[in-house]
Image (cartoon, rainbow, N blue to C red; front, side):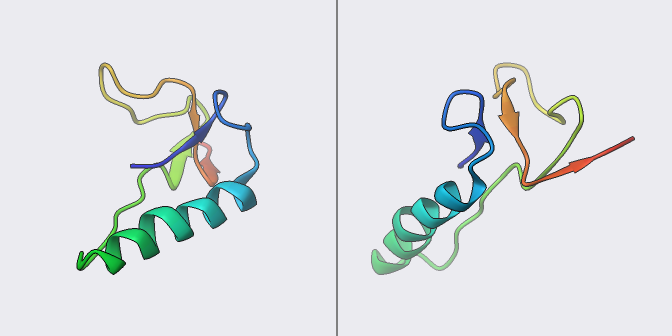
Length: 66
């Protein structure tokens, strides 16, 4: 799981995606993983949907207005 939010450089999506590509995508594939899932691509304007105990301050790459 990876997210951007109030706790990690706000909406600096370019920096976050570059780090995730290097660390998450290439890192897991180099260790024989067959896939990677990156959550929170699209969230609504209330930063949801989310689950109890999940990230309440995460941003999506795309905001969806209800």
